[in-house]
Length: 500
Image (cartoon, rainbow, N blue to C red; front, side, top):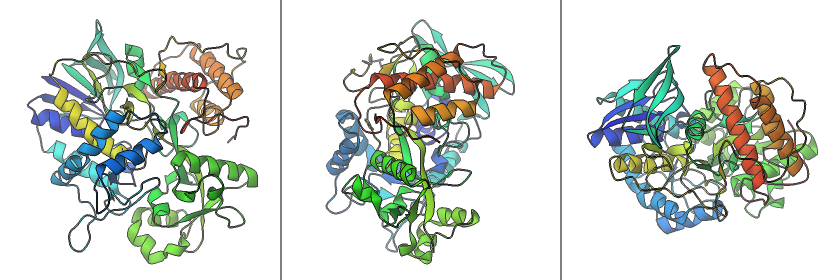
């Protein structure tokens, strides 16, 4: 069969390699260069190696707790059951995870994990090492690679997807396929502050929406608690807090214990909101204090963070550094079953672009790389099998959206929207559909976004297509957030907003 994989992170490349090894003709299409995207930026590791006293069942329990009751238990069971196999596969494909002197894998612990079960590479360069290994593996096969090609739309024949439309070198072209695997990542650039690299503009989800595929849980956007509060954005791994670093206010007090008994190691949504509130209260950024770890340990365990913070003028071994939350990961996406099938025959989705049900309302740290490897492999293995109809997740467990959907009650009167720009959209999303949401704010965001979408939009280049995709996803996200009236996980409703 002829298979097209769109995206070249861990999920897409894993799917491509498995499909190739199954005898399919595979083409990988990627927006940038092969291996670009969020995977290479992941400082955290891959959960799924269980030491003494730990088990897959305990990993599943931690995942379900983080998901705030909205995770799909069957998906979580698949994730933890397949984890060790997929990590072993990454090693076999050349990924060099960190090891102890005796050769055993070094295991780390991150927030909301009950045990040390996370493997890293290069201390804080796990994603870069995985991207390097998988890129080399793909380059060593007969897989066709098309780089710097933008996904414009899916090609639909009846109710099935049978190809993609590309903008490549300024020229539109169609690429037909027996199956299309979307692995284009999330949509961090919906927001004014994000850890995501340039180009993370939700292109795959937007294309699936236009084609008629179901999406769900877009209201659940995870904000990473600790981004260096300096331009450009730079993530300070959760593993730093796992090693003992603390979050302090202007008076040096560890304020996160006011919100959760686990303090800095509470779930990400709790820590992010605590930081946002404290920063607003004191009128300045909170600080991450890693000085107790010492210069030698910081340089050895977190070489990338150590280098970049020093390049930015911060000596984190001597003084606490300013941090702020930022949009990091999208728990929702294209609705899939346990094998990556969507509601449209011929269309699979894997990785962050997919809503597998693993994450529920809040992702557990270091489950995202694992999800990409596990479900990328499963999707490839399901290609060519009879298509099983996918039922859209129930309204009680997941919020579904379609482009024609209207809000359950009238939104506020249509405002005189300011001129559209990506920056203006990102600020609306940050202020109104970010960490702390209100009914009025969500309504204002939705009517502003719809006013922008109602204006003529010339799709002259990639940037314009990206803006159109971001607007579509902004409407979908704000609408989903307005529909879910109760706070749960990363979706939090309260009377006050925190602005930029």
